Length: 433
Image (cartoon, rainbow, N blue to C red; front, side, top):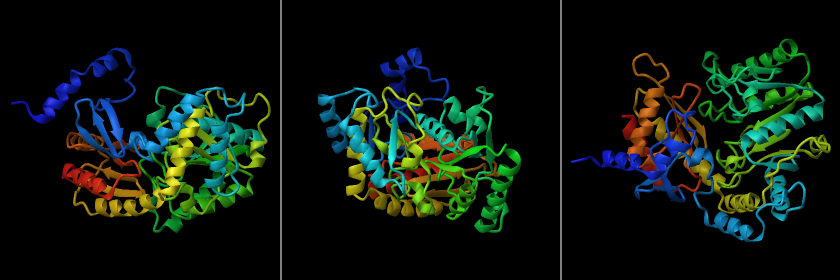
């Protein structure tokens, strides 16, 4: 008799959707598409076309923070669909665009005030780099190793991950990479020693590795694709002092870590630093395509006619969804829920007895479990892929990431209940053992 798992696999293989993917959709850039034909979803549960339910602990790559098909977000989008779908919000005025921009000014840190809306995180990063150069009149960029900022030419140029850059180079010149908080940190006796070394490296990079023409330093407050790397709490504050002294802007890439994901509305708030430019996407509109970068009034004035535009940027439907999503996160205190449940999940994962686990790290519900070979302790992408597959078979969806592809990523919709999270954690633990 065919096992249930084999039956499900055969059902997926026989799916008309899968057949059309193989025939018509380019997917050769991923090792494999997960054998789940997503049919519908609600909250933290995704259902495939066979009716099998999964606890979704990856949230469409950390996107549906307010939950799949959040009723308030859906209602706002439907209402806007009946009124206006597109007008180009930079040719004409659009109320949802204005209202979302006002809301962004209210929730972003410090003096950040004016927002440009676009379609994705990568587009947001591209725009942030451009406005930083225009405002400062400088052209070089500082970035971090093991970072990830997108897959366009410009964003890959500032991405410090060779695995994402292969076969696409050479990339744009004028980018200097600093050591990641996730590399070599263990060599230091304390976080303070590491930060002191990072300060020295930053000063030396400006002095010796650039032409003195640096416009901005770009970094993820928590490095997502790099393996959920959390820098020391004083790291950005002390680097920011050096940046300010040299007139270099700080661009915080919150594409993945924003909108309550880490237990605060924006991850940079954990570090006591006000960025000069903040880039967002993913969780901003709970699954509707939308990206943004938010700057001070002074920096916003660097754009002149013809410098920038986006045909679909500030789309009224996406902006209406964004407003509803953010209002939901604020009213339901989702950041607090993420912080509290995240602490429980970190403790739970750290208590797992498995020689395959090298480290568990994260903030809020942005958690990474790094896996290694039990023999030599080398990063094990194969083990991470195996755990993901076994979790999927048992009804839990997790992600895999890290520069070595060996980190299990636990990034569920932020509305996930404690019961659902603990059930998923138990499945992950069984699969690890």
